[in-house]
Image (cartoon, rainbow, N blue to C red):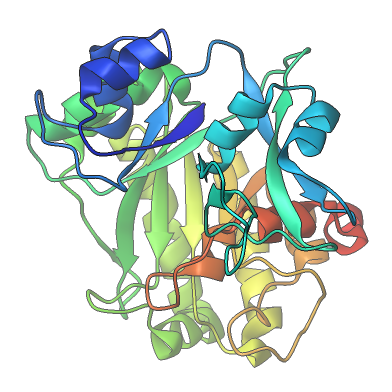
Length: 329
């Protein structure tokens, strides 16, 4: 997949022809309406004629765009498209990030940039998607559109209440569509109170053994009745000191799920070291939790969350997944 920066006078048709693809493909990939007006400077995703992944490359002294392209095994044009940079012929490079180019991409020795890596060997992966059900046919359409690419569909979310019961979700349309597409539906359980992930709600439910047992029973019973294949727990913003309580909750919930033939998974904040006292990540004991669940999701998008500055999370994600801490946990 490439990135194209729209210039003055370009149309979807001219761009599609430039990349030997169709306007329909470009519209679908970018979720554009038919004949939508393009704006100069707008970035568009373009389907690639060959499968590629992103790879982190550390720039060396003297690196140029052509030299990096050769190292990546792609053409100079392909690398330009990948980075979304536009050649500026005759430029001296003064005041520019990449001499000879219009770009905001950092280009200094030691800086890391994403470069394309051509896929020569494919492997099977599992893909999960989260859906906020609306309770109407739009849920089914959303699932049908991407169902062939999904392994799991998490219905977000069954909110845990202070009395140990759950807030129901209008998920019938989504559930039917998921099963028709052979996607396993998972019931996401959260400590979301309608406006935020509630720290005290999570503490109360986990610290009181009676409430904890009631919540676990509510989760398992609802999951079975609704036809879910598993349970996905997304408790966030817990007290760091509640780490032992969360471990116990997941251990007990996991045992209850397995007795009923349900899978158990969790969503966790991303980190590259344990940091047990950290305000947001401290409650997640990677080693203990990893042994109690069937699989987990690392919420790497938290490095570029909606309340923070604009940023690409790919470098952090690669760093997180490749650290010895995550691998050994």
